[in-house]
Length: 449
Ligand code: MG
Image: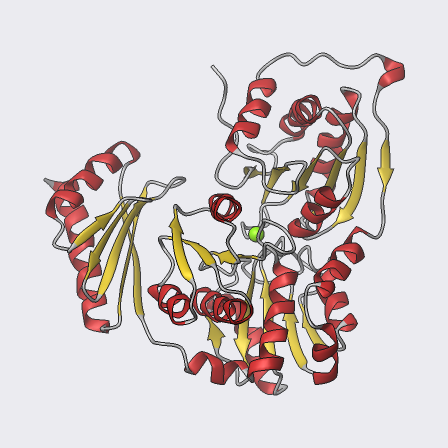
């Protein structure tokens, strides 16, 4: 039987426990065989980056395939490189995104720059469990070190926005790269756009990630105070591999990913009407703003490759997740942290300071909770909740979304942990809270019966 290696975001594990050089070498052989032509490789800034990168590269070369080593890059920068260089058949990004520093991961990129589909991952998994023949000594692959991929990416991002308007505005921002993959590209982007950047955690030799690497309000306290103290126009933070980006307002208020998704949807729709794609877990704020701006919303299951695929299918103008992962189809079909910065700058220059724009958005209250639940009980719990729901309608795109006249509850079994996530949202704070408690209690009631 083929071993399932890939999770929702590539193959991830703890270094020298489940993410080892042996695994990386065999993965490299499988990837080289399946991709069958030149493979680009890049890493984030983790201590284990070189160990995993060289093992994967050695595996790729041993089956007769060349490797282009692009160095340290954000995930969207290697994706852009693979998409725009016809001689490159695929890519490998060594990163564990926002996971703690003891983790690393291997993520495959298709020849068009998108995240590998499940079918492509299955091909690599099938090869991985075989004995893979090596190339004869004189036909092994070479490794080329390529500079400049980061700047190519930054220049492409700049070409998608009104760079002159941004340059003229002479904005001042604070930037926190979590000492991760964007330490060079995001400061370069800001410099080229004539934006003055005060940086923290933009040192690749600094301790990755500088602070716990999920870009949440709690983890970004330093950036929040710095943005406030320096009276900057904007605070900007990336996760470890910079496919995501979140913001702090002028005045120092953390902006949740739902809000930046809603705001940029509105901005994009003001220039071009069309479809916006987001997972069912996103706030109704996004739907309300998209409708008011003359657009249409389409929902998907949770996960950025699903959002990207739906965007391609429907010809959407924009899409993204509530965690700050936004997808701009004119650039590429993947989450793109630098594009998110550039669009937000453009949006502020045209429509005014972020603080004012955020306070104009409708207010929703969201309660997120989780309940421990053994994996083998998850299906039964879902059925039980569906049977005892008191909503007006249910949606089963991902887990169970129970829709009420003034809000919704989403009950979703986690794909990676033995837990059930419950999200409850309403414009009425009390309704959001009481429904979260009711459904949390229903899950426990079923598990204890
Ligand atoms: Mg990431």
